Image (cartoon, rainbow, N blue to C red):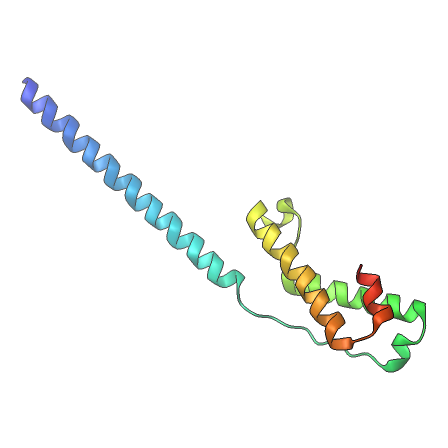
Length: 117
């Protein structure tokens, strides 16, 4: 082979590799954006409770546990291992904390809210 032919082959290979890397990066970005759009879908669970469940410390603790379980169910796992990565675990943890805070605000019972802190 002549030097100019080798030079052209190396140049063509470099261009092909850069295009491949670029397309892989685009595919990875598309997958990440797809998973992000799925992660931001809104879900909700309704929890029925009565004023009697706010009357005693024991019943408030039981209601708070129901709220925590519902938040876990809606938001997903908060450990990196279970969530499949730190980023998703962090989002799930934020969702969990926000969900509990919103539930406490909706119920409006200070004694129940104190369980969250």
